[in-house]
Amino acid sequence: MTMTEDPVADLISRVAAQDRAAFRLLYSQCAAKLMGVLLRILGNRAEAEEALQEVFTRVWLRAGRFDATKGRGMTWLIAIARNHAIDRLRARPTALLRDEAEDAVDRLRDSAPTAETRMIAQGEAGRIADCFATLEADRAAAVRGAYLEGLSYQDLADRYAVPLNTMRTWLRRSLLKLRECLDA
Image (cartoon, rainbow, N blue to C red; front, side):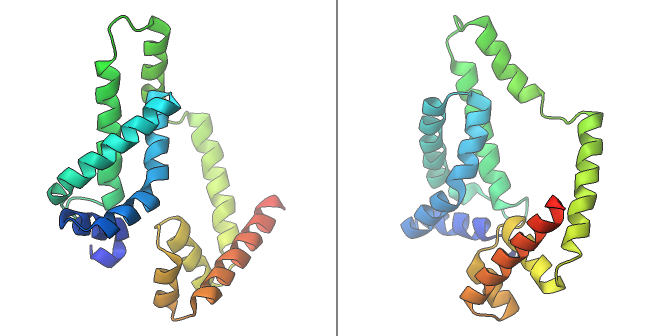
């Protein structure tokens, strides 16, 4: 995997070299997703916000330990956030109300979809694939790159050799076309 395929890994390697601008960019690109992970596990916004700051402190201190050959950058960040949240759950006072503890365990345990949910998801995935097939190949690939691979608009514009505003137009029109197809 090259660095261009994983922009988060590239930022982490720059953070390992104490690049503050890369750290700010990493925070702006990844904080929302990590906040979602922390909030889901901890169930409390204030605690999740505090944990997020602690996670990014750990990232700053441990970025040199990241190995891009072992996985994607976002996966590494999520693992740090998840492990930190679980550590916080374990550190809660033992006098914690039983219901609250059970709720926290339920949030961790119930992540596997049921058979019914999987069947519905497969049907929806088929509809989405059919709708993607209505897009021009380069437009469909650009949408996948932006929303599934996390590539920036500039990366996509460079990849397809089009101006940045053209790429924005491609993505906006493609999303509208997908929405129309899915709503039909």
